[in-house]
Image (cartoon, rainbow, N blue to C red; front, side, top):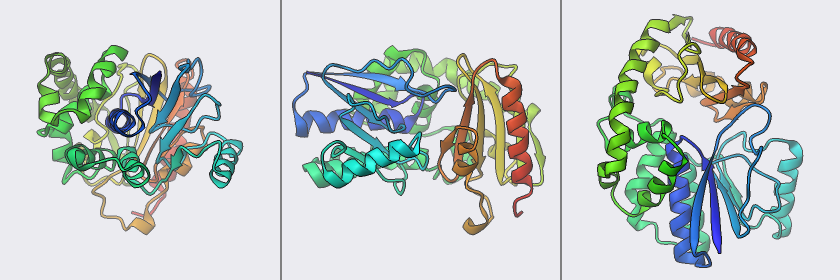
Length: 327
């Protein structure tokens, strides 16, 4: 039997979630002969378009809930995990009767989905998480933006940071197929040292440094909110901590970028802001108004590639709202 693992594409926590689920399933469930991996991305018009499920088991990790009957496992920790009230109702009904969704787990209190999977696998299935402490540690740091400083996040001295850069700019789906199993088989430094990872890392480091300079040129800070627009320079990803590295006094950022399949509004809270938690705006709630989502402190919205002007208008509205929040 094959298990197809759908994971949040171009995301360190998504890749780690897929890897820890694979190891857990292999060690404690033991029904699969093979695993394969499919990255999922948030995009306008539906996040499960053209999804091909395996005839065996199908798992979704670190991504929105799907009501498809083919899905046998689901783990997520995002505040905006459900596409509709009907989806949430289906999930909750299954939790009550213990049938349809008995192997589907949602808890937005977890910093990383990797941590959620580890906890459930250990609690409910006796999975040994002791060999994975390094991975769990860095999944929480990366997905929870728990770096000691913006410099630590942007200068990328740790292996996990360099892996994050490569994963966020993965050259193709085959890269994930090769990388994901290694994340729970060896220390992160050894994963980074693999030839195929090093081949991808060099060019991405160059792009990273170029992104710093481009965002420096395009960024504007007004009433605690950074705004920038790099849609004329298509990119598949950049470090979301660059704006805070450049303008540490900011509280929020609203950035516009464009990739091959979407125009993206990235909305975030400075992890090192001096504002009190009670004064911070719920970013996920803002993004949900436009069909996006995320966490309370960081989120995103996807528009179709030809809806650039719509995205620009929405970004302007969001930026004005954040500028009016407490300073």
